[in-house]
Image (cartoon, rainbow over all chains, first blue to last red):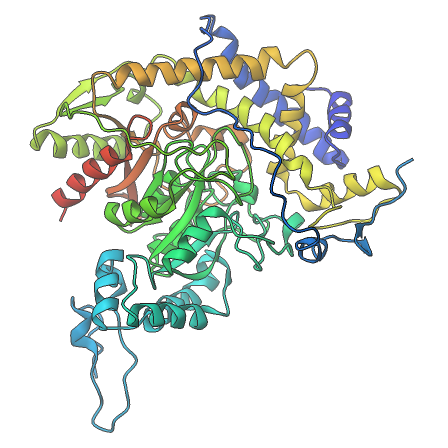
Length: 93
Length: 496
């Protein structure tokens, strides 16, 4: 079990609003799931840090930008609120 | 008059009434494959427009019951006519004019891409995914976007915000998930082929439950650019189709290095054939349906008859796969879903201030399973738990991969069932998330090891008087998809 207190703290970190019923259901479900995944702690073998992996992050040069503004309208058309060429949000500070 | 709908050759079906009305062409969809359709299109036996409309008619007829499509596109005719022009100009590729259904997690520019989530219900994609661009270049016809578990989180399709998909073989049962709409659409002849995504079995399990072929390529073989990320270190795009050859044709079209996906990789692994197939018999001892096991053993016999040796192999770490999976997945889900905040695109629910906008948008926008995984991920990544969970899970993931690599030194491929049971009843597992997660026991390991795996129909088992499809899973070393295609075709031929 994870306490309802803990669930509330996690929900606030995850930016999710939960109902009281959901808090209780999640405290039970998450407790069960965590008890299940706990079995990975049995594995004690150490893993050698292998050489360079086959798949790795590849950086690209920050060059050849596209022409300014050509995607603006398409992207902003999806924004819930806009003001001219800006995405509009409520006051932050 | 009697429609000759089931005769083999569609050319015999084009005829004219004596009062000069052209009869709508009856195309034998049931026996059609990509290659056959391509040959007919090139010969002019039927047009891409007629083909697309034949599938569309099935989709329109069956969808109210099955719910495989979230949208059937309104511009199918225009797309098909463009394909016909290309065919007439003698410039047809194998996929030109071939109808496709696309899992609603893959972006097609200008069309809705919802991820089967309320949070993106009205989101319109602003660009094409790389796989879509490649299919467009090949001249395919997109019929529509298919239903799925919300953001691909689920194994039954019951987590869609727009209602579950039903299994076309028994509508009281699930089609599997999360690519359930794509699998059902192929199974009910509402498309010739489809794309899905597979993070822990989401192509193979529904393929198995619906009786179609489903391929999860090697991690990195196919670009994910323009595909909504669920678990970035495991997600792959792959085909669902009628035959292994169809899956191969699609895979060869969509694969390859893409500068827009830094994990994509071009490679073709060829290995000398050993004629040995590995089976981890130890893992099949318990928790598997008796009929499914019998079906699996019968499948192995097919290969024995063709001169293959079946070797009992050990994958000692495989039993930890699900525990590892349910650490890595929620952790990456909690990061990947942070972008859905009601600011840049998608649903926005107004709160009292900016943080409350986020809370309210995400409360209304995400379904229960998505929220459960975000919460779990937030937990396992939080300070003090990271090493015990995420970091440990990544280490065990490496050990699982090492198990497979070791086994592949002695065998060409590894076989096991796709799922421990045939399709289960709708609602059967929704109350208990762990029982739902356990259905992925045979599919998750290939994702963790980053290796390719295919589900090939292997017959049916009977439940309540209904014949339910079962799939054989074949797993190969990284970038050795060709081994899957070769073995899969041999299996299909033995069953003709």
